[in-house]
Length: 565
Image (cartoon, rainbow, N blue to C red; front, side, top):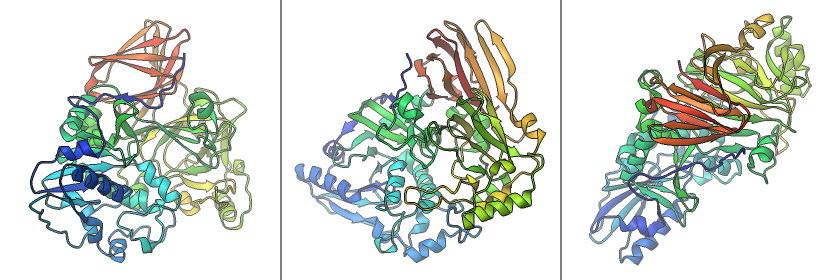
């Protein structure tokens, strides 16, 4: 029976998940102490301070709060310090911020606690101030994005009078600065506190957090999946996986996207904390990535898995992704957004848009794209871009600069490089968003990055590859589905017959697996067993070494496997 687990959870090691502010406050040392309460901008800081104050009062202690947000530089100075020379007036993109959180302050305080109670310095960057105890209060990134989309959230260091926050600044300025800061202080955190419910937070001691991360780095694990709604979204994940039944659709399924994915630690939904997946990678890069991949990518987990669900929805935009030099010089990512589409659900009478036609007139394509964007004139994208049948279980390679998009009625498993915010749209069907605004397209960015060599017969030859058998055994086969010289990762498929076992090894490189057909498998390693069901994604850290796949159910099981060879 197929059972998709929406909340994969792993036990804390050498400690427990604590609940409520009283337990956290009870761990503070007696006497004068400076508590640094650090975390992202979207935290409800007033609720956190109220909770700490109430818990301290119940123990006969009075806290003195110091709001570090009052020490930020002026908003004008912050905008100047984080300005993008390459993209000064771009409405949708900014170059990734390359500084540190300290750059947002002109001067930091040097507080001293009172003799009879804790001084609590709170806000983003609190760890930069001299302190005795460091707590990190966290709110998963999806909450900050939701608040800004709702018009209730503000950006990092943004004063209320500066107006509403923007996702542009959140994605490209706030998150890089906050992530870099968290990585710098992770080894010194005394308590990790999940404040998704600020009145009843869940927390782990710093030692328990680090022991748990060390254990996870040597065993298979899943990240917590999320599905987002868009104007083109379908309903496959609602019907088949039980996700977000009340939402308008389940367009984007984030199975494994390192900058946003979380890991659930604890014993159950009432006693769990969610930590960023990237915290695990930052803490144990060699064990997760392998030494060679770590040398190449540092602490960036370089592969992502996500779903594009257009079943009973609409076609995606036709877009491309930045070529490598442009991605680095303009957008600030050290590697670019190569992608592949694996057709989980499709049919020969449904479409995948990919590559330029052999008879394309690029100047005419450019002119029509501008007219659609500026004047609302519809265009026939198939005059310029090729169409392929969305054959189930076919892989399409999509190197940077290649125009592409999924048609309606499909479920695509994207197996791609980690960058995910750089879809440069040529055409989006004149589609409007939930506020009845025409969705943004990026015609000039797109045409600056268009690879005009991906044209005609070369598209089918190079990008729609036939599977090649890599290895066979008793009841199993491994095939290469897609590999290109310019793409740093490789996509393979494993087929395991009923009751068969496939013994394999990471050989010092991480693997990512997803069950694309069949009931699932049991993955057995030296640390035990992990079940993987249909549509679920599993990371096998490089440190795991040998592991075995045992198929479940009666039909053969097919898995997509990605790695950096």
